[in-house]
Length: 265
Image (cartoon, rainbow, N blue to C red; front, top):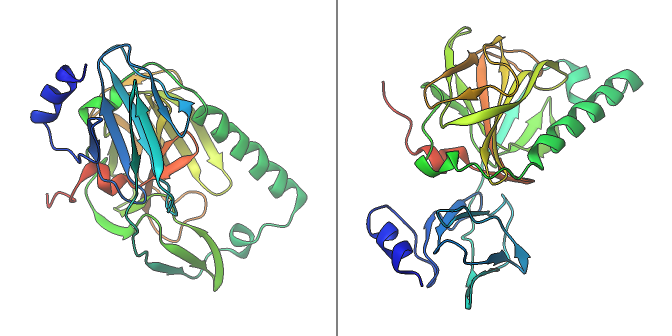
């Protein structure tokens, strides 16, 4: 029943971890795309996942994933063991104390509301398969922050970095790295500043923050290479850059694994 899926594997780069056809990096922070015959039920650790009419499905490994995951398609199952990675330590100083350790009740209420809005759009499980064509970099520039790095902000340990930072001059255009639908636009988040989130289907979303300008509206469809905003340093930022993150529901994955090496031009 996997004949069509095996033809797909023969024409694309892949990581074959078991008899179920999948492609991607089987590592912490990796996103895997599988393909089975349309109508084949697929589950991850016993939980059903969406399968498109073309037989596509997604699964992801978080930054700290260490346990094997059971993938099952029809009557075929296997265990996927993510490889461990070594993460960097990122030290950033000179940030406004209010943006590192917020204490004011109005700031805390604002942060809770903004986090809830982000969680809501990341719960959406749309049938779109805009992820199928892969991702490219939303702009070119120096990588000033990498996925998974332990952040030390103003000397204080904080949560790990859940995306990549691309340093570029203020006003540099930010282009959609894959097709998608705009599901969130916010002009001034406490930490993120001007923020856009795109939905690429099956629970896969991408976020763009710290922008100086937003050029799209909610519910708008964008194609690969379409402009969504401009680089800035709004929110909690020590210099102009784009923070780009990719998430499968609540699991952050490494955008660099999806886009490959940064283009030199």
